[in-house]
Every structure is written in C-alpha cells, then in structure tokens.
Image (cartoon, rainbow, N blue to C red; front, side, top):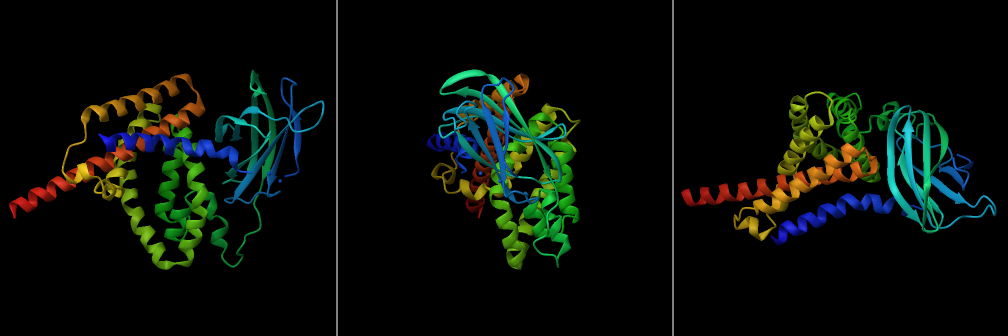
Length: 344
C-alpha cells in the first residue's frame, strides 16, 4: 500500500517536473519585437546562440514589454509553441513568469523555417483573452565541429542521439527503425506527438552528453548498444500490434510498450521493495483505480483537443504502465524463485 502511494506520487512528480522547470531556464537571432494580435503588449524573441546549431540546445529568449514604457512587463501568463510547416514540434502549457522574461531550451533537429507562437493570456494576475505574437526563424545547417568525421554532421538530425552514437551511424538499420517508428507511428497522431513533446524536453537535456561520452568510451558504447536490443524487440512487437494511425491505436500500443519496458528494464527496482520480496501481490484495487484515472484523463484530453493537457496525461499514462510493468515483473520473478527454492 505504501509503495503504491509512493509510486503514484513519483509518477506525478516526473510528469510535472519538466513542465515546471521550463520557465526557470534563464536569452540570441537578433531580437524581434512584435505587438500581440490584440495590441495589448509587445513580445520580444531572440535565440542563444544567434545561429542555432542543429541538435544543440538553443535558448529561446522571450521578453514581455509594456508598449507605453518599453520596459519589461512583470507577471505574465503565457504559452509557447514551435511549429515547422503544419506540425507542432514543441510546446509548453500556460505558465506564469514574475520577471517578465524567460529563456526556454529547445533543440532544432531539422533545417528549415519555423514559427514560434507566444500566446499572452494574463497580465498582472488578470486573465485576458489570448493574444498571440508569431515569430519566424530560419534554421540552417551549421559548420561541423569535427570536419574530419562527416558522418557526425548529420547525426543529430535523426533525433535518436544515444542510439546513433551506440550503433555508429544514423544510417544503421536499428537507428533507422527507431526514427521510422517515431515519425510514422508515434508522430502520426496528436496523442503521440503530444507525448513526444514532453519526452523530448527531458531526453534532449541529457542525450547529447551521453552520446558524446559513448563515442569516446567504446565499452560504454557496447553496453548501450546491448541495452537497446530489447527495446528494439519491444518496439517491433508494438509496431505489429498498431492498427492504423488512430489515437486509440497508438495509446493501446503505448500501454503495451510501456509495460514491457518497465518489465524488461526496471524489474530490479521492484526487488528493493519489501512487499515485493515477500511476494505480496500488488493491491489490485489501487492498481485499477490508478489505471482508470490516467486513461480517463487521457481520453478527456484527446476529446477536448487541449495539447498541453494531452502532454501531461499521455506522459502520466506511460509512466504509470512503466511502473506497473516493473512491479508485476519483479513480483513474478520473486514468486518463481521462491517456488524453485521450495522444489529444490
């Protein structure tokens, strides 16, 4: 019972953490300043570095400026989305900044034209009808950091940085499968792309460092490569079980994938729990309640079409089933081991 409660709290913290820390990142293309669609306030946007490098972290520096005084306007409620063509590639939910300026980390994975939309929805704790300022960014290829190794110029574009470093090239079959599964299965639905927005916020905060470390440590590279093999098998099963490109199909596939990932990779964590070592079966009532809750909220987010809410609910669904997979697999392993010892 205690473990189940802690699991639920941990899941909620993990889901909300990336959304809470985004505004804290402290801003440069030359600053563009635009008046919001309703004419209430000016919004400034710049990038750091001035010319973003593909695959590297870029800071989107946003300032809210009083249109009369031209000074920073404090206490703003805002949203931010980044789109390329018709596809939203990044977004954060409504967030409050007391300082009136924020710096948001993002990694551009493909060259091309992007639009950054800043929606202002409150000033000085007073809600206002949403007003938007839309900025255009032209992101192009940059000079490679290691000219002698041309294959590394395109590695970040795959979006699978750790796998690319593990298998040595973005053209490796394993990396191409991961990229194809991401683009053609997960990103094909609103629910899937919403989850990836939240996932990428966490993943790209550490993956470049891990990938660079892999390339300089062959043993780590081999270890990561071996660790990815079960994931490839799980995703192959998930791909075969996905019927069509509907939100429901992707969610059901995601549930199965998350459960298997938890069972395969995180079962040792369950052995640290005393109730699991004592082969006490997890409380089914609590488990059913948690599952029903996250699935209900996910359904509501899809029906309402709220992308920010969908980011939270899809992430909560994935974390819930990863945890359940780990719990039940470790419980089953302990039970089998005790029966084997009794038999012997």
